[in-house]
Image (cartoon, rainbow, N blue to C red; front, side):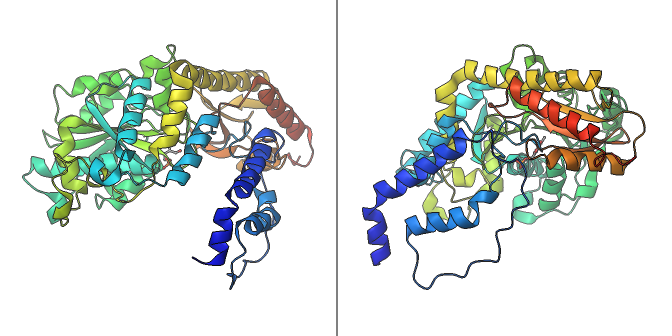
Length: 472
Ligand SMILES: Cc1ncc(COP(=O)(O)O)c(C=O)c1O
């Protein structure tokens, strides 16, 4: 062992004390930390000939990068759909690194890690009120959860024609129907060789909605004349958080032959609130569902779950099996995650989820979800009474899409958004909806409080009052 490693392992208490102190400092001051940064960390470091050791490396990191770390996990970071991190999830995440388990193989190879993952799936399934007919596994994000569902769907589609696409590849085009598919779904179609151009867009309920028009969908399905197809439904579009009518779609299962995938990256968590649970009615009839944990479950990145109906286990294995590794045994008998998911080796992503689900339970998540929704409506109330702004879309859950009143040019909206973000107190992202440019604010963090919304409102007021942000 090199001296530095020996030295570091003898200094573990000091190293961890340093890391703990720094972590507490970051988390306690997160409300004050900037939400935006133009910090310049200088040129790239050269690889040291002789290493620095951990304590000196922490010091270097703090000098070079730490001041540029922004409060993405703070209460006023409203860009994209960035979740926060609960204390329990962080504890679970730390221990994940410490234990460094690999939950890929059956228990005789992977120890208790697979059991932990299976239990975390049961807890999450419970939280989401999904039936035990769904099996699940952790992947890095909703993109990979969509990928897992759609890869298995591709295998199902091949089977309808007596083909094994995993083995023989594709020589036909699959029809995919969707109304407002997330960009990651389109990306998955590219990655899967299905082809992003093969998605057929179904009209939405109306111009100011992103949810699928059920009659339009039926019309399209009828045109397929019994041809099997894949349907991707949205349970919470990223832009306006619109939900396809899952109940009506579930009824179509009786009549038509299709694989039903639901992208419920963050919308899944609406089920935690009795007032919003109806939005997911019917989703239990899906074949596959993508749920992001690093969004509304508030665990650190990277964490998501691909749920797939248990009746498709063989298809899933046919898609993901390491088939030239007979020493791994039959995956259906000797369960191993590496034959059910895209990745083979992976960290114990389930542990932070297990920690936070156990620590806060059903009522904890109900209050996290309801708090975020309340914050969105609080901001929405300001927008609807404001002299300067108006809503771009109805608020349906946790996201507010708004724009300047009247027909402001796009550059003016860009300018306003740039001014909001350069306040360093709040971060939002741009959007375009129903032919208009706008600004989007998503509440996905347990920390966001009513006071935070007051701060956000004061930033908006300052920005519209400032001559710099609105060129006359
Ligand atoms: C509806 C939806 N699906 C999929 C994704 C992709 O998630 P990830 O970035 O975790 O892969 C997102 C991310 O915002 C999303 O909102």
